[in-house]
Image (cartoon, rainbow, N blue to C red; front, side, top):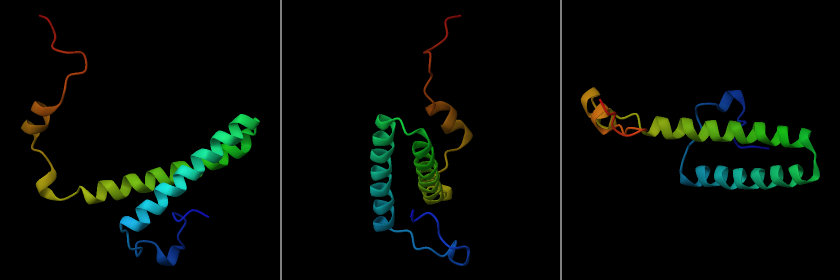
Length: 94
């Protein structure tokens, strides 16, 4: 069972450290291997189940990353963000 599925009474109390994150990344690696194996065997239903778990794990990791980047000193001002945003298609010719 995924470590993301924490009982309701323990939610918000989990200690998130490097070991927890590494275990989740290792679990994701195993899930991806299972998905690939089931795809090769043509077992779509099993793929979907594992993809849902993988999605939850990735969202959980993204929330951890977002929460760790929420300090006020790391947010750029509006001028800094627009100046440092790269252009996708290059400069426009006028």
